[in-house]
Length: 390
Ligand SMILES: *Cc1c(COP(=O)(O)O)cnc(C)c1O
Image (cartoon, rainbow, N blue to C red; front, side, top):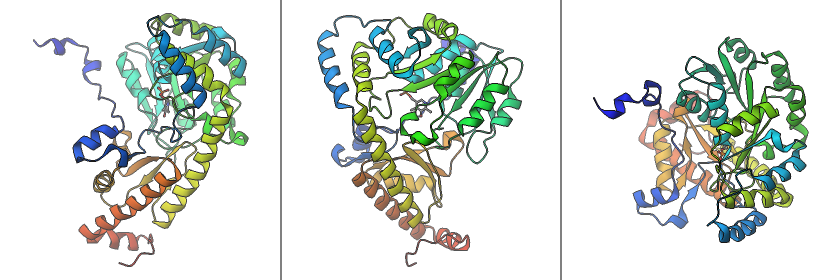
């Protein structure tokens, strides 16, 4: 018998997470110069990293011979002040991914189950399966979470419900009142993980006051990250906020030094950089308008998004469109693994990047309609026209 046959079946059954294609990989494959490649595949911040964070991180590099502060004291103090929670309510993670995994390891086990939505963030099924628990995927409603159906799906052995708000890759947002009502109705024996990775990209007027819910609901875990609006995806810092009983358990399971010292220093500084987050937000708003306007002009259907990305329906052969984009040096994200084989997800970039993406998409579509004459006819028949001559 092979050793790997002896790994638990639920481990062997995991299909690996497919990350966005790295720039260096495309450059290698296509013999392209890395500098001409535009990656709009992983919801990274096109402005780069908060300059405050960069400075703090380069200073912190001088200290990497030492172990990090395993308690993350300074960052917890900064987060406490910012979010009005106490230090013992916070769990720091190697990205918020780590926090999601800690929640699964604390509350799930073989025989337990977790509920999440179809088309929701891929990490939820992954962390569920990794601990041998059962994932219950609930059919989406208009690509978003169907909270009523998710509530119905909760079984006596369900211990976690994952809610991504906004969701990735669909960009859908649940109204705050709906999430609140869900919390009021769901059994207090179920941990509700509210994943707010894109919170900083929401207009203030529609942001849920989710932190205030922590006082009412000891079964709520809110997760946030420095990967997106703060531009620190590569250094891996995220955090969760919950009732101290919940965070206490998660902190016991956590690796003692799960967040590195450079990331800790960067995150503390990044929190101060209100200006950078403001600029990131404004750039995203403008870029989202630019991309949606462009897609409409191309007659491309898309799902309105509240994140820094958007999923659009490729016309005809999505694989061919993606390959054409790659050949033109544009990396977007196929989302077949999210049960959306007809969509591609694009991250909002700089104005010039968005423009290049739209141009390249137009070329990809042209080529598609040339190689498959049926495609354009189908488009015309369905009432979608692009205004271009045949
Ligand atoms: C990007 C993302 C995260 C954050 O991942 P990190 O591990 O913090 O980099 C979490 N949830 C969703 C829905 C995301 O899209």
